[in-house]
Length: 205
Image (cartoon, rainbow, N blue to C red; front, side, top):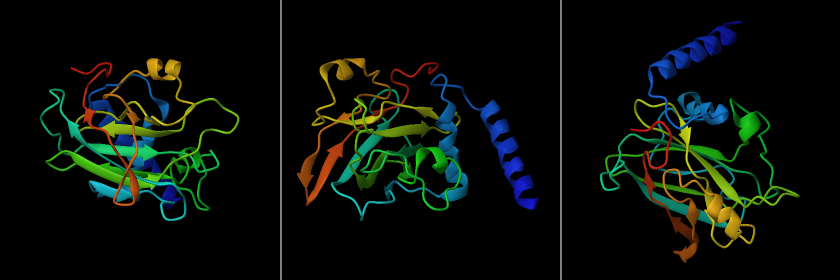
């Protein structure tokens, strides 16, 4: 009963916060998953490693800088939420899933930019969905101070044969292009993607 009351208090508190936050990005049912960090990782850092990194290949490193809408000023205090499927192509929860892990799987994590706006995360390259033609991808949601969580273009891999010309043209470029090119740096496949807040984001001023 006590756990139930605590959970309800958290939900109510989050509803109040969201009601007071700037509504941007348009509809996004599962963007609420970003808020799991308040319980699971209350002090996210600018550099982190997602679960499964050591046990899966190919290992990848993705880095970049979050900028304000001018594309020049680094953005401080932005939370990034990332999640993706396993090497089998499924969103696989752990044996004891918490929060949105039930739907998003265990291969997820949170970052928070500092004054320089930079971020780096380590993970493994996910597979494509089984029996589907959707390219391999890593989902990414953002939360700026004073806004609700919203999604930007997923990370896509330039070398993915499923990333067809049609798929490339269908991207919305929310926050900038999510198509990344992996190159070998210091014995790990590495890519760079900068993010511009508000770029092609509905309701953003």
